[in-house]
Image (tube, rainbow, N blue to C red; front, side):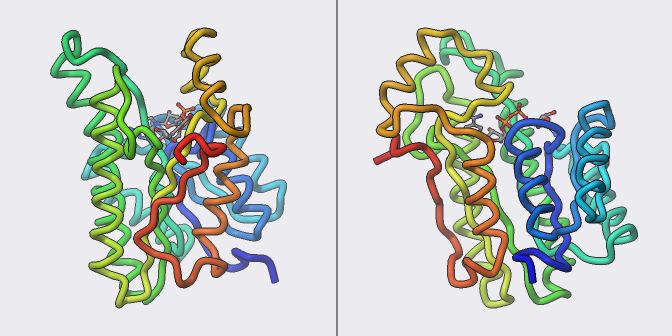
Length: 248
Ligand code: NAD
C-alpha cells in the first residue's frame, strides 16, 4: 500500500515550482490530485496530463487562492469531482520585494492577501470537509524568512510569519478532531520565484547555506509528503525548515 493511496490532496498554486513538485510526489505516493492556480494554462494542462499518466485521478482548477468566494467554490467543486479531501497544501504565494521606504500600500496589501489571507480562505473552506471525515492534514508553505525576517521583504516575511501563527492556532483548535496542521519553512529553493534574484544575491545566499547548494522543489516535496502522510500522525503545530541548514 502506497503512503497516500485512496487519499485526495489539494495543492494551491501548483502549476509550477514547489507546488508542482509536491503534486508529482503525492501522485507517486498514490494520491489523487486536485490542484489550483490562477489560470488553466499550458503549465496546468501539462501537469494534469503528467499526473493522469501516473495512473491517479487529477484535475486542475482555475481559482484565486486570495479570494474568499473562490475558496468555497473550489472546495465544493473538488468534493463533487473527488468525493473527499484528505490533504490541503497551502502553497500559492508571491513576492513584491522592496525596502519599507519604497514599499507601496498595494505591494503590502497584495502580498498579505495572496500569501496569508489565502491560507485562512482555504483552511476555513476545507475544515468543514475534514471535520466530517474526522481526519485531515494541512500543510502551509511558510519560509525561513517568516522565522528570521529579511531586509527588503517586510511584507513577505510578515505574511509568512503570520502563516506560522495561524498554523499553530489551527493545530490547537482542531487537533482533537484528528486534523493536523503544520508548516514548512523552505530556504533558498530554485524555482521561477527565485530566478528573479541576481547572481550576487544568489552567491551570498548559497555561501550562508551549510550544505552549500540551493534546495530543489523535490527537497520540499519530500517533507510535504511526510507531513501529508501517516508517517507524521503525531506531528502537529510544527514548523519544519527545509533550508540546507541555513536556519540553524
Ligand atoms: P512560483 O512563483 O514558482 O510558483 C507559485 C505559484 O503560485 C505559481 O504557479 C503562481 O501562478 C501561483 N499563484 C500565485 N498567486 C496565486 C493565487 N492568488 N492563487 C492561486 N495561485 C497563485 O513559487 P515557488 O518558488 O514554487 O513557491 C511556492 C511557495 O513556496 C510560495 O508560497 C513561496 O512563498 C514559498 N517559498 C518559496 C521559496 C523559494 O525559495 N522558492 C522559499 C520559501 C518559501
